[in-house]
Image (tube, rainbow, N blue to C red):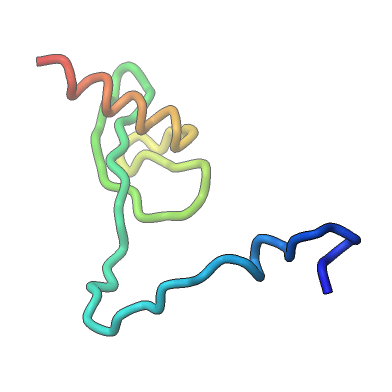
Length: 78
């Protein structure tokens, strides 16, 4: 029976999921960040799943999305 009177089933019931293979490498995917503090500029790989990250050198906290953008902008200048 469709949910809430609609004609189709909810998205979770419609989606076909691909089973995970056993031989896939189960390693964490890190994100490269660059400290947003002007005097620091340290680059490191972040493995946390939060939206805020702390620089391991100067301990400045910054948003992960901004630190990722800071890393990309500074490394794409050639």
